[in-house]
Structures are given as C-alpha cells and as structure tokens.
Image (cartoon, rainbow, N blue to C red; front, side):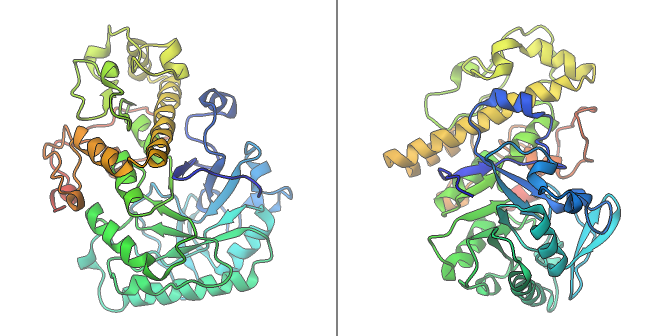
Length: 415
C-alpha cells in the first residue's frame, strides 16, 4: 500500500463491492475521487465463509476494484442502524442474506489472509441497542472487554501486512470508552456508533473521551457521520476519515445535492422553487416536470452538463434505473467538491470560521457551537441518512421515498 491520501477525506462506500448505482466506466466520469474504497464482509456472507476467500487473487480483484485504490475491509455496513444478531463470547453476530452468521476473530483473520485488503477493521462487540436506557447492567463493560479480547486474538493470528484500524467501543459510557489505549500493531482507529441514537453533539463528546488515551498521530475514521453538517462538526473534533454513504442516501430518496462548503457558491444552483436551507432539490417534485435547467447551475458534473431536471424527474416517475445513476454521479461529485473545499479552507487557516458559516447557512443544529438549527422536519438540512435508515432498503429508487412529516426525536432532543 503506497498510496497517500489528503485528509480529511471520504472512503468510497460500496454495497456488495460496488459503488451504488455506478459501474466503473460511469464512476470514471467523476474524475479524481479519493483512492480508497471500503467493503464490508457481511455483504458476502451468504454462506459461513464467503466465496471470495477461495478466489485466490484477493478481494480487490474479485470485485474488480480500480487500481491503485486502498481497500478497507470492515465487518458491518455503516448505513444499517437496526440489527438483530447478538454477539457471543467467541463471535460477533451478523445479519446476512444467508441468515445470522457468527464471525470469530480467527475466521476474520483467515479471511484477511485470503482477501488481501490494505486496511482492516477487526470484529467488535457493537451494542445494537439504540437508546442508552435500553443498555442495562454489565452490557457495556462486557462489550468493551470482548472487543479488546477479540482485537488481541485477531492481531495474534493475522499474518497479512494489512494495516489495522482498532474499533473503539463503549456505547454511551464516556468512562469505558477510554479502555482502548495505544497498543502495538494498530495503525488507526474506527469509531462505529451508528446504532446509538443519541444527539450528534453527545456522540462528539463521547468521541472526545475516546481519544484521550489514543495515539494522536494515527488516523481516525468515524462511521455514520457522513452527512455534511456532521462531517464539518466532526472535523472540528479531529476526525480524519468518513465514508460516502451520505451521497447514496440522497440518491435513494430522489434528491439532488445543492450544498457547497465554500461561501459564495451555490446560490445560482438553487431554484426559487426550493429554499436554500435544505441544500437539496426534490426531483420527485411535480414542478420539475417542465424545468429544463441543470440540477445545479454552477455544477460541472456529467449529469448537469448533459441532462436537466425535467429528464431526471421523468426517469424517476417511470422507474428507470438511469435516474439513480445520474443522481449518484451528481451527488457524489458534489460530495467530492465539498471535501476539496474543506481541505482548502484548512490550508488557509479559516476552517473554524468557514465551518460555522456553513452550518449557519443551512440552519444546522450544532449545540457545541451555539447553533440551535431548524425545527421544521420538512426544512431540516442533511437528514437523509436518518430517513433512509428508517425505510426498507432498495437496490434502486423504485418507490418514492417519503419525507417524514413528524419531527425526528433524535434531533428534537439535541440541546
């Protein structure tokens, strides 16, 4: 693994080894996306051990990963927030297409040796309870001790040269999250609290407690925080890596992204039919029927150069798969430009001020910055991941994703 990454950046999100809605030839239209891709082993567990482990040339070749991308192998999909499989003392439980599977540290180490990833995130005992009130007794201490034990077992058995990002667990216990101290064989840290339904300000505080005893020179990857407002807030706390699942969630609901991090951008791309507070355009909206302007006037992506809102609206209404392809191209391009602008802001030393302006522009809730945010759920910015997690998964946008008309409890309680 010789590739270098400018951070903060995102890891390309995949499902079953493929970027959603994009074949490699279409993805090439997006230009220089970060040279790093994540794959989760749960996508391949139709049987007890995935077929790709017997392929012989590694997981990158199995899924035709673009070279020289860095391949990150994780256990779980960061978009899935509801899980039923329970861990045992010896193995984590995984809800797969083949039923509930058990993944031991030894089995994962053997898979890593066969799949040849560049970075691995070993199994951990993630707590599936969404609310702190549901986690009782010794559940959190057991989760921490199991995860540390599994990490030690994995490191002892691993023979590949893959870098290891240690999973940091502890649920809502700030004290127990300090349990993972710096240790040999660790190249970075992964924070996966996607199932924990507490306000994001509380997650950031838990992250702050988590890193107190960790090596500050090693990268930090936060899962479940890919929405633009969450990214900006997490970077202020020292997070380096995210994933592109947000762009997928926007596409799945038939939206086109209109947000920009750099101030002064984006105004020309916002139709008077839509308030700029949302940072998105609803392509299901009947008013798109005869709107022949590009999805965003100031966008240079393939979709905006060659197509218009009316056509994408038509494709959605007629349930054509091309609709999600064109939307994903646009939304991922927008996400890429967002991170490019963030890195430029950091280089000029203006990121803290630019971050607050961005959050204010889209009326985002950020209590740690004294920003109350929007109350109306229909105008709330960047909540597509929360909405998607409460709906049935779909390989393509075959049904119109309904906006929630009632307030989301998770956002109402953030203060």
